[in-house]
Length: 107
Image (cartoon, helix red, strand yellow):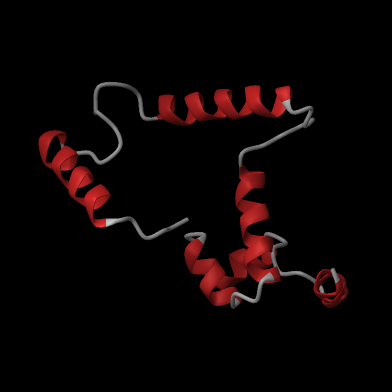
């Protein structure tokens, strides 16, 4: 997934990257530890919210569907999600069916 960052954030990331050769990782711990940390945090939040069987990737799925429902072209949504191909976006189930689009528009 990609998003535009404000110039001060880009500047700060460039300074960190120059200092240790990494943008969002110190290089001192296992890379998987960051993913493990966020999975753990999201598991706690989902449990507190009463959401059963939560998986972090559902956030990407929701983002994709919402983009398409508001009229973003699937090619643009695919690029925002970091997919190498529009087919990946389509196969992921993000492309809403015609009945789903009609139902959403009537809301």
